[in-house]
Amino acid sequence: MSDITAQPQPPQDDAFQLSASGLEIWRGETLLLQDFSFRINAGDLLWLRGPNGAGKTTLMRVVLGLSHAETGQVEWCGHPRDERRAGFLTDVAWCGHQPGLRPELSPRENLLAWRPLAGRLSAVTVDDALARVGLDTRGDQPCHSLSAGQIRRAGLARLLLSDARLWCLDEPLTSLDADGQGLVGELIAEHCAGGGAALVSSHQPLPAGAGTARELHIGGEGTA
Image (cartoon, rainbow, N blue to C red; front, side, top):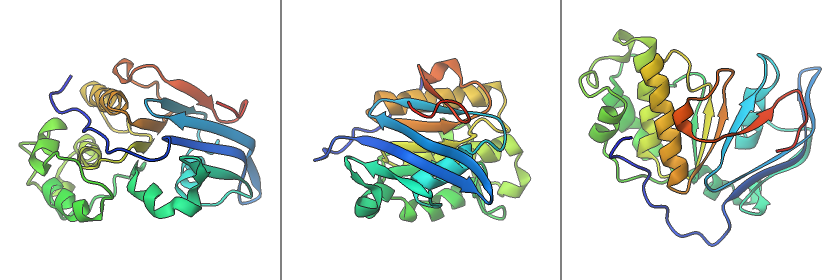
């Protein structure tokens, strides 16, 4: 376990909870989810499972407000998410299936460019974040010269710069070797132990070091 742990969370007036109820989600003419509900509280790790095309990424996009459900509601801290949208966005860190890094820039340059756009910043420095994900000797190389696993690590480093309470991670184990997957587990465990929560989509089993996860199967029963 690393010495860099989740930063203390600032006091909040509302209970920390993300919930969704009665979601009906379509992709084109395909019904993905119907009457779908779940909740996440502080300290929770919720693992979205299901085959390719089942709707895991689409569900995450709906939770984040990037896509819309036909029916149902997403609430943050007991209020409709869209009524608290600005606060919600500062409280969420998103790590998508694509790392979202500019290939001509180095990991360090990407992190420095992204940091002003983050909601709440942690006390972790860019140097600390790069070292934590194993890129302290690669931080100044252009991303196009790095391996797919190293690029994935650079994307994960953004999580350490954010003080967001909710992590939404879409297939975070993609392209990572065993050590890299273990790192993801450690980061998730540290975040949840520090009072955060994680919503993780993965068709691969989560690393044992991530801690105990509640499993939410897409395509089966829709409540967790």
